[in-house]
Image 1 (spheres, rainbow, N blue to C red):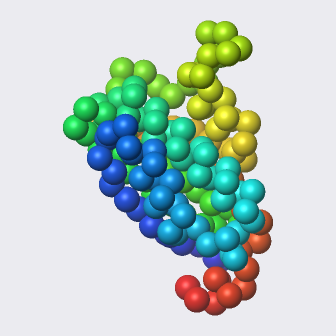
Image 2: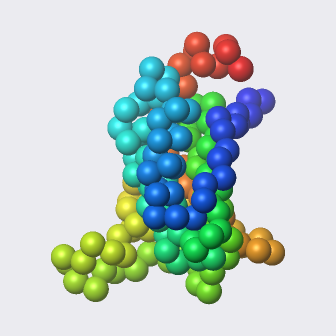
Image 3: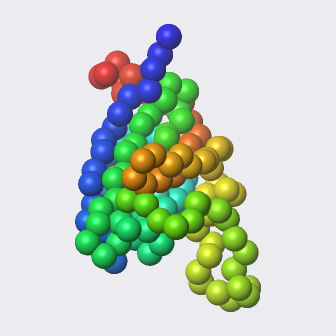
Length: 145
């Protein structure tokens, strides 16, 4: 049976620059010759949204950290996990206050673009995860593992 392969994991300081660091990191580990470009764009957008949520709404901001882990599954699924350092609420999509509000859309995007997503609390924080269908992982990548 084929198993998932860890593409990478990164601890990011919980600052306003964290989403940009996450996007940059994804550019180094997601190969456009191996995955569909639209899937890479979705993974990048959704990861940026979850990292932003972690920095804004949890103890990961203000001197904390966010951990981003990325796995690749046979058949083309890309799983991203964003672990924060805990907060008072659980991740729940909400409607923006009005149609022009720029806030409150992150988890709604995750819900719309991911094949599946969820969250899990541990003793300290919450890991929010999602999976995107990136198309069949090309044979060259499978043979290299």
